Image (tube, rainbow, N blue to C red; front, side, top):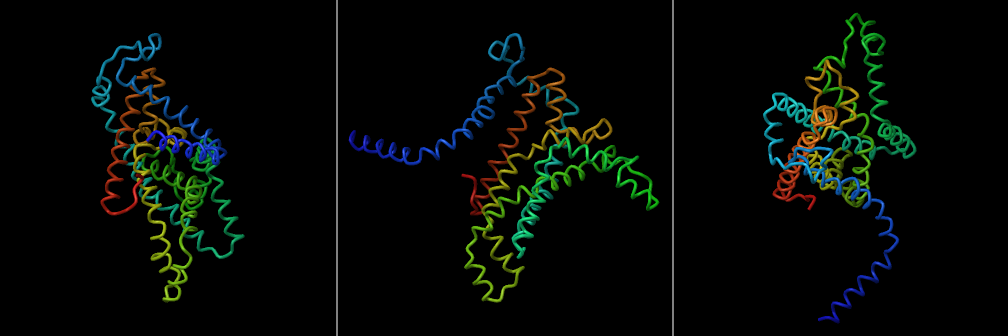
Length: 309
């Protein structure tokens, strides 16, 4: 038994030696997640404490679930919850299918040069900061000098202060996020499409299937597992709307619909120096995301689809 165990260790060491450069390439990624994702998880304990900078995390008194009781008792908490949840649902309903559609359209382009140029153009917005995009939107939608309102004036309509009207905030957030991220997100679907067996397309063509039927009966089933996995991961972030985008588009006039958990934790927890409360809000949203992740993965398994584990 000891000799077989030693032989297993030797095989493992030989394998590591053969693949050492690949494992060395993993070190920066592993270090990133350890430093910025796993080690900071220790700080979540302040959600159960009355955190005091002078006493530190360990020295601050333990108060159990008092922060959570206080959070659920706030009158504006439920409005923030609804804002976050409804905006996430809109992003999911309109933002999630768009990269799939975009990937399908790009894949159907027969001119490869034009396809590459189009891909480059639609990828570019992903690399633009939300601060820059927010400035563009503010100027584009300005009631005084904005291009859209100048056009409305020429058409005989009154100018509209889009960013101050609560009815327009959610559509603006969803549309701007689609414009910024859909091109980048379509890369995964394009990679999945490229792995579909080309013989299936040939067989479908021989059977008389047109382009739309091949897309519906070959391409989409071929990338179904990728769609399901990304949908599960998206549901795991159901309460996350992104701080930067909301913050740059938020103002006192649209606060009724624009206050989400990210900005709420920043305003109350950071600006108000109530760090325990900010950690409480963050932990609550993480738990909601975990519940959605586990539930969606279980449903996918129940429907005989591939889950994330």
